[in-house]
Image (cartoon, rainbow, N blue to C red; front, side):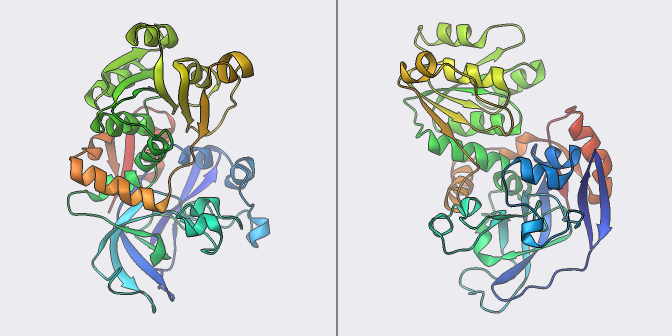
Length: 356
């Protein structure tokens, strides 16, 4: 089979790999859709081994791997089971099932793994698309425990989005304990931010979308934002104050990264406000007393989602008819990977996916 491997410095390779064979407790998935996530660009632009270290993950050397080991990219996998290994209970998963893949593996024994937070594994998680082969290939082998059933109402592409980007937005909304009583400001209206807008709107939340790109600001309205603010023209904090009677929002979410939007996410909330930091990279620079302690604000770091909440997100999307497919602006084939990531790197489109 063919698989896409990130090499850093804006280079990738399409290499030949042996078709996977499932071992005990494993399943082989025939890919139907594999999403392109913004975090892929870290590995596309920089040496993957350097990115792994910079993010604080257990490095390749300590896993007995060479830094040049070709690892198939892509951590938004979705497809259909074509083979299962010994010990996979057919009452749980069988050949032909439509599934999305929770893209982390852990020890299965620590408290984090036992509660579905495998990415927090005490012994270091194996991340598909980074440490283990991901979804940018025709087939993918994973533990059956990492699979989540995909209802017929949810497309393979939507299932791929939920496997990371849309699921990450869902996870942050859960961490904020958000409800229709809240007002939410979303800073950064890329695929994760738009997903947050879309899901929160479906929950009945009044949503304010903020970005510095006019096309993204306009698109947020289509995803259910009640109000939108172009941060390149207006001060988002001032505008949010106007829209909330001088109070500020009850909740905010940073999906942009960078010092300025993170400050704005904090300062746009009212006293007792709740802030979720989602975007990877950059630092938070706020005044401890004036911005946090004195306002009784709560700042939450939200790292993707649990396997249980991924299942909940899939069913929420199915039950409420949330059009996740609307996120996608570009579809590609594997042999177009070089062009796909050049375009994605230029940020000249929206969300992309490889279809098989």
